[in-house]
Image 1 (cartoon, rainbow, N blue to C red):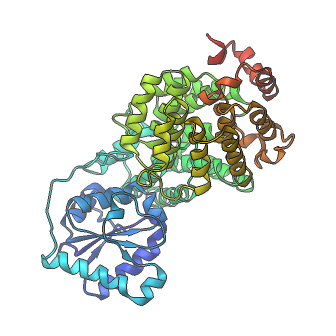
Image 2 (spheres, helix red, strand yellow):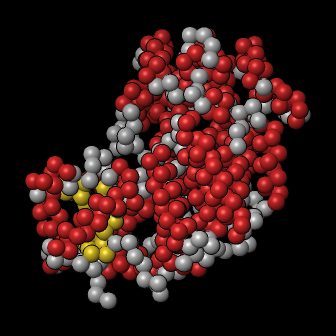
Image 3 (cartoon, rainbow, N blue to C red):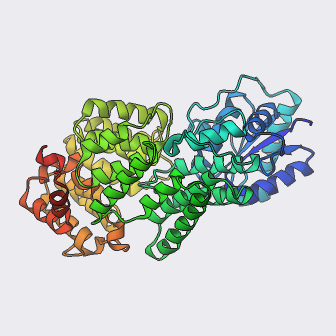
Length: 527
């Protein structure tokens, strides 16, 4: 089969634009390959590796979805290494590093009508095909910074899908057909770019659901595909409006049921059902469910993190760190695991290990939003506020799309901690941010606590948990289902933990009942 002139890399939500561009390239005389079809006799990893590396050029279509896709970034990085990268912009998104330093054609709708961007794309492709551009072939290096490692064939890929990252399972490999394997790989890669427990990118989660739905259609007998789809719906439920949650809950349970019909012990489906159950005020039930799930299976990373989240939510952060430490983060790399490991170690008081976890997280995910936010908070509240302030002023470290008012609030706190701004001014800056962003409760509570305004911190928490007082509007629209307690036990709260008002707060929330029923105690009360 003749090699393609152009390998087209894009994110799933941009499929329509990719097809249109592929047609335009075809009309211009270029042969184009993209992943719409995989030959039945070839494994998906072989096809991707062969087509990308043998194509004369690789055209990456950048968009907000593409920038959030680890898969697209991986393809773009491989093309850059082979010196045959051609870039085009589909929307106004800021390109990720280092691609923002490379020429990028403008194919946004207005620019496309003028034709300049299209001419630039054609010229670049012509140069590479004609040999005037540099085209250096190097051996492929797969698995370097992926949410999952890419195997050499469908069986190996399926084993890694069943055995990679949060979904580790070694006793039984699922073997989807090649088309389903490709869709499953991309869907799980997109899902893993979010922290299932604190996802803040609904668009990326919807992308994962679209891919995984297609995977189940391509191979309805793949338990991995159904279990992964159940987990994606469960993650999306956490960040969706209350009116949408029942439907997402039902879809998650339905997909999990299909997975269990194929494999009664499918771990992703098990994890999905744990994730969608309420945690706030249901800590005892949640702990019992989590431990039963772990006992019934291997110590799967997904299930370990579900248990760790539960333990951190009741102030047992050292135990949460111990649970998360059972997950091999050197072999299986995902942002949520890296970020959670840092937070649990920090909250458990092991700063040396937390420093190491931070270094690993930054190495793996220098611009991931959740990793970046936890990095700033850790530096700011562990005696390194000057470093936090430098990070906040460094645009090359800033995740694309970070709200400016959030950055300003964080800068105000860091300036106050370094003596460059009065504490009262910093607190007022944080409260102004909170008024405009009611979901940003805990970063503001932490700032108030550290800057010495415990009265405002407690008033804010009363509004959030009970819908009372000046800050009553902070009560989540989703009610108890949307509330969480983990941040109550993180280091910025230390000055408030022995305050009688904190005791009254945890009593009203129901945590005292949990500690009494289980015979446990939170870390701050000693062991």
